[in-house]
Image (cartoon, rainbow, N blue to C red; front, side):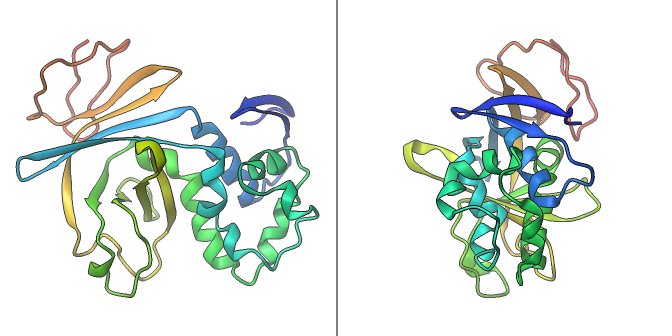
Length: 238
């Protein structure tokens, strides 16, 4: 819940978030993404005796594309594009300077809406059990232009969301795209990986979200609390 007025400092921006009754989807998605910045998910996966790890992080600059701003070029947001370009988009939305509700006037609204819903549920998708695979676009049943290293499909929500993760500059992994399922299952035909370990790091403090019961590593870090494994139903000792 957002209080009536709250000061947020994130990614070098200081701005006021004004609570509005009936928050529109774009504003809700911007707030969900703002909550994820500063959070990192460290995920280890394996297949056929080989394992790999990556750390997923979030920045303001990643948000516009995932939110579908490229499909909203027919919308007047009441600001010059330079005022909400790139990393400026989230601050302009949450400060109320950008007329976020105008997004719904786009001719591509249904396509955009699926992206915003995926962002709103993104933290839930990553916190709970999901399926993950190395993504090969040529295996999708339709022509697919998405070029990403991993695909995630949620398992715990009533709706199905796909999240695409890729490696950017400096070996940083980021969310490249996310949207609601329509008629195509993008995970179909992909080689599904086994999740071996999943951590969520907030404010420098790691939380163990899941540890595969058969996964062993040289030294496990010490966690502040005791956490329940997501799928195996056991509690990991401190």
